[in-house]
Image (cartoon, rainbow, N blue to C red; front, side, top):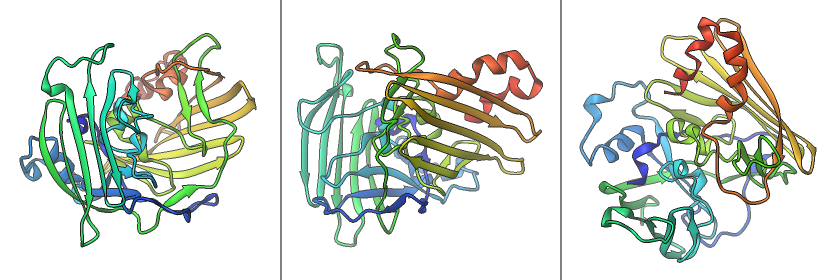
Length: 327
């Protein structure tokens, strides 16, 4: 099933340009829905209780599992189970994204039901395992029942609860919005920025192995098998987007990952990435990126792409294992 490769996020709180959403909503499911981390493990372990093999101190923490937009559509890039696949634009039956096709979609005030097919360029599937479904229905007690399955994983039934008491949105129209590459002729995006200035991690290693798809608001947290990642700072302005992520391992000093994008002009932005190690050593890199007009390819990781040359140049014992923090 889609959830088999991802991890999750935690709670959110407001920042200066992050405010409670007040626009009318068609779907009563609109917002972020979460379950305990141990339930995520159970779901990806063929429905078996994996609590006995989950010694992490955050096993009972609630993690965002799916995000629903005001019109009832699944926000693919902000959902734990779908963000690693880079899905986007799948709204109505017949919509495609790469090898994925939405074959059925139904949105009502209390239900969101979709079916996805994965196949080759012609859209043909090779087996029933190339199909998946997601059904989410609001319950009388305010929870949501989610039935999902497919893509080589068993059927799962999960009871979700609202992750935030209030729905948030970033009050910003970003000039950085779009896809950005290392050169004007490269169709692969190193970075994708949403219309509100938040970073879109879908389809990246950061999404697949760290669950960064929902890190947007200060206080949002991510859980991996060995660490907790928390968004300490977030700034979204028309010409600037920047975040600072703290990486915490039990009994160890924190690492800090920093990412900043600034507008140069309509077709170019300057992007900086950095890792602050507990030894007070910092590895950083800055590149000018160019706007992509079309193209759906993505690099694996914005951090490794921007920092690779600096890490190789330093050849420090600290930087030799820098990528292990993402595992």
